[in-house]
Image (cartoon, rainbow, N blue to C red; front, side, top):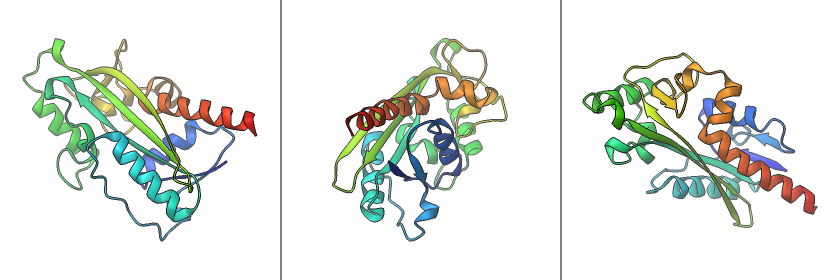
Length: 199
């Protein structure tokens, strides 16, 4: 199966390609379709955004398209930053500005109340308008300062449940087994295997 990744985020592309490398799929990126228009992420949920992006890219490329919308939900902030995770500190803010704003917002939150989860929703859209979705979650807590040099987004401040290292302190293999994106891609893998068995 040919799949176009409906994202221009290089780190996301790298992570998805790494996790799906053993799947029976050929991966293309938006670099292979230079005229593909950007899709505004104006949905109220991760699923709405993922479905909108995947559907638009699949329609344009006439190829199955996989979109990922993901983010961080923090209990003490009533689920924020949520769908605004990538632009929490404002449009065009980089990862560091976003997690620094998060740490400021949580400066008075006690250790026992710093629960959070990463959420990932993948949408696989087909040119005939069918859409399949897959979700993954990684429970954990927000630290008090950034640690680690790997990963991206909020990885330097997120400790997965049961671990004393942030995602940014983990190697790719370990993080992929625990991450929200890894779990959602596990659902995609099961779906693709089932489709291949039928054919």
